[in-house]
Image 1 (cartoon, one colour):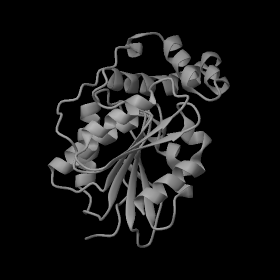
Image 2: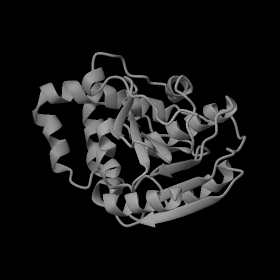
Image 3: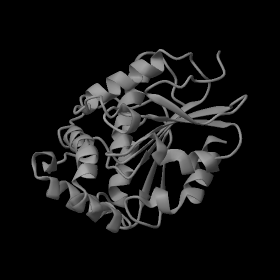
Image 4: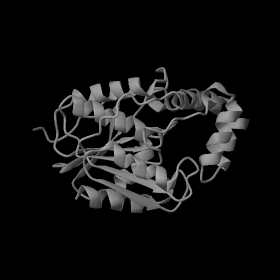
Length: 251
C-alpha cells in the first residue's frame, strides 16, 4: 500500500507527513477554496496528512467553468481519488456544501471497493433535507445578502457591492455552488459502511442540532455528534477545538 496521496489540480496538500497514519481529505464550503482548511491542517496532531479539494472556477482554477451539479462534482472527485494509490485510513471532512459533496464522494468510493475510515460532516443537514430556496436564480444582491447572513463578520462581504471587479470574480463560482446545493436530491438511501461524525454549532442559521443527529440514519456504523459554540463558520472561529476533535477521533 502506498504511503501518500499525490497533489493534483483537484487535490492540494496542506500538511505533508513523511509516514502518515491517516489521510484527511477536506471539502470546502460553497464559494470556498482549498485554503479554507489551512488553519485546520496547521493544528491537527502529528501523523495526519491533510489535503483539500480545489473546485473549478476559483483561485488558480478561475478559468474553468463551475460544476453546478453536486452529483457530477462528487463523480469527478471520486474519480480523482480512485486514480490515486489506495492508502490506509482515508477520512473525509466537509463543511456546509462540502459535507454533502464529501458524503456523495464517500458513497462512490465505497461502491468502488475503497475503504473510508470516517466521514466528518459539518454545518449541513443530512441528505434527506430538501432545499427549497432558489437563490442561484436571484440577483447578485440576493447572494451577497445571504453571505452576510452566514458570516461572523459581514463587513468584508459588503465590499462585493462596492468593488464590481471583485464581485465579477467571486460571484459566478458562488452562484454555481448555490445551484449545486439547491438542486441536489439524494439518489440512494443505502447507508455508508464508514462511521460518521457530525459537527454543528449552536448559532448556525442553516441547521439545528436535531438535523445534525439525522446523519445517524446514513451510516451502518458508529455515529457521534459534536456541538460547538458559534455561527455557521464556527470552524474559522474555533480551529483549535475542531482540530483537537479530529485528532482525537482519528486516534
